[in-house]
Amino acid sequence: MNFKIIKSDSSSKARITEFILPHGKVSTPIFMPVGTNGSVKAVKHKTLSDYGVDLILSNTYHLYLRPGSDIIKQAGGLHNFISWQQNILTDSGGFQIFSLAPFRKITNDGIKFRSHIDGSYHTLTPEDVVELQRVFKSDILMPLDVCSAHGTEYKKAIGAMKITHKWAERSIEYWKKYREEWGGQLFGIIQGNFYKDLRKESAEYICSLDFPGIAIGGLSVGESFDVFKEFLEYTSEFIDNSKPHYLMGIGTPEYIIEAVENGIDMFDCVYPTRIARNGTLFTRNGKITIKKESFANDFNPIDEKCKCFACLNYSRAFIRHLFKANEILGPMLATEHNLTFIRDLISEIKSNIESNTFMDFKKRFLGDYGNN
Image (tube, rainbow, N blue to C red; front, side, top):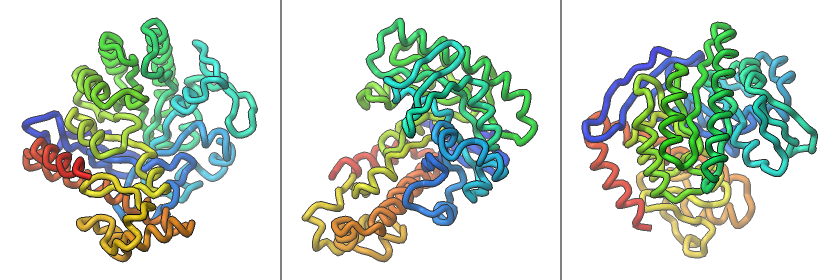
């Protein structure tokens, strides 16, 4: 991947890196908008591209069930199917299957589960999941893993970790057979629940398999923010710094800043777009719920410093009106705003890493953000 560390912050693990994928260069830190089914909800691909997004996330589990890998193969791969000619990371779907606890069974060989769409039964092995992403021609692939919930007892956490490790071995062996075909890169996933000895063991084991990139899984799954910070900081101590670091499933300003401080390069979450569609918007002074009566005659932009289309052209009062009238433009504008807010946050983070002022920026930004 030609991974390079461009600049490291002098007072934290924060860093700027870049690497090359089949559909272009990626500069980090980077937030990946989530297009589960190949589309980021309520926003056009051109809008994403115009805003500088060059890596989105889609989900193998959902695409496997609908439209199916045969359709995507006939289209010539996922990029052609969804008309997105920049990079795509495809999650394995392990977390989605984890969420279907009453409808799935985990064995050493793979996962048996019932579709949430039509109730049909399916089995996926680690090799199957890599093969699906090979068909998709994903730029970054994720292996099948077992995510265990916060509060899982120690014995079950060990079992989940051991299966994840076995599946990681099988996944990377299968990927090695075909990686030259299209250049997609497979990232390993660290598990271990909320036990420090397991986190250390998993980090060291996954790094020993020499994946092109390393992901941290099993955080931000219901634990408190303080516990999240503790285990992120601890886990990051054992990760190979010569590889990209990906923290799965985070997308709020405070979590992003904490991740960057601990050397994380990549993150994703549905949160910014999901809350936007329900009328919750990021501002420099914290989140606001635009449907509230207090915004009925507020003719200011959502955020004075934001340069998104919504903030440059519309007032809080109008956007509130759109939501109250159930006009689809409301969620569309809100989604563009939240994604722009996160993009601008990342840009400021990079600038402060370059000037070795990241920790000062963190304190200042979170101080303002917590004022609302």
